[in-house]
Image (cartoon, helix red, strand yellow):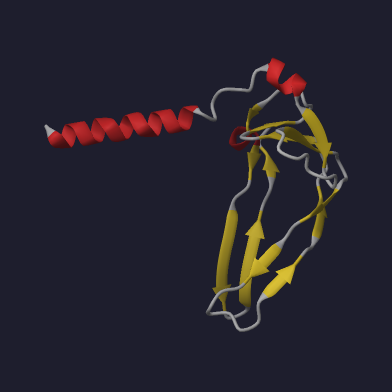
Length: 129
């Protein structure tokens, strides 16, 4: 009986934690939010929509450090995207109007490895549409 209760409780928690990102934000909320372009200053204490225009320069902060590393890396390469993108909390949009959970729109697996040729970090970013 106790095992059944633990399993049932676990399933309920998993279900409710997954539901938070399933619901698209209400258009009334979206329409009231400030749109901030990539590279602008973050508004103080306010929620906002991040707008990354196609071709915008996106700095990526890359660090490798820790107690096993004797030569830490702190690099800031710059990349660009080829599509317009809007991001608000757990949601993303390609047009600022049609929102969906970010993981339903963008696939971004990270692969990290090390071999005789050295270390490798690969981040692949794909639109799922």
